[in-house]
Image 1 (spheres, one colour):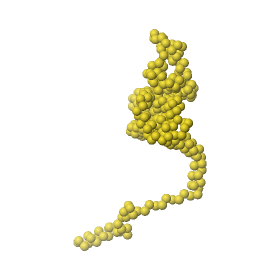
Image 2 (image 1 turned 45 degrees about the vertical axis):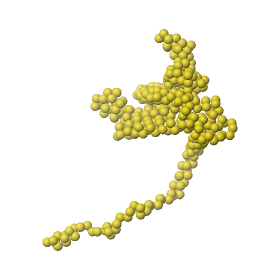
Image 3 (image 1 turned 30 degrees about the vertical axis):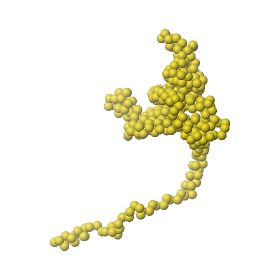
Image 4 (image 1 turned 90 degrees about the horizontal axis):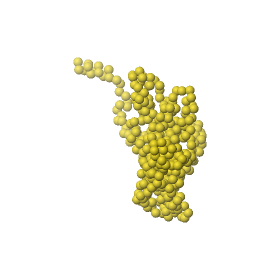
Length: 334
């Protein structure tokens, strides 16, 4: 009986392959397949593609990479722009961390960024919602809301200087209705920064266009299903619109932080490049500019520029990493 059962198992067992007796080769002995060589047509397409993007490559190398490398080299020297640079090592960086005006300008810049960036996102979202209205004149509204962002910051600063003039400015006339006469908003450090923050909101049209594109990409079926479930407009906005706008919010947040760290033109025009009153509008870029072109200290200014670049990269990385769980790149993730 036992012999017959064993014979039956041998007949029903699958046939053994020749490779079953061979021990699997270790990963270290496994050879990688050679990369397939590019065909003539593929090489031709590659050369054509590189030719078309060569202006961009040359532009990045000439106007981004080279200035960054050159700024770092100059930051290690004492250089006024006229005589030969003299190597001083990291003395400019040590001086930057002990300079009280660097701390003041950094605080002013962070104050501006902390107000202007979140407020700018809110204003841009509101503008995008207005641009997304389904009315016949929506094209006119979109143009009217976007045009202020096309005005140069230099011109806007002059316009705001007239608005806040304590003698005949529009803001002074409005404040006169409340009993306050001849209020000079630019003579107080805090109100001067708030004026510049308010001015920055006129450029929210650029971010609004990006939000508008995000709004147009949200399927209307989601809102229809939400209305069937009894969700109101606010619930639809917080549960559908904001989550699906998160990629655009992240992009505008990072670009907004980058722009806020480089605020310069408004303060320069409104205060004639002084950063008054009491250094209340002495932003980081304005102090960097004064060191480079007023004090003829290009080495120190280059060190400040390198530190600003590193700070911007770190802040952007922190925002990106912190928002990874909050950003949804497709409808299914929302």
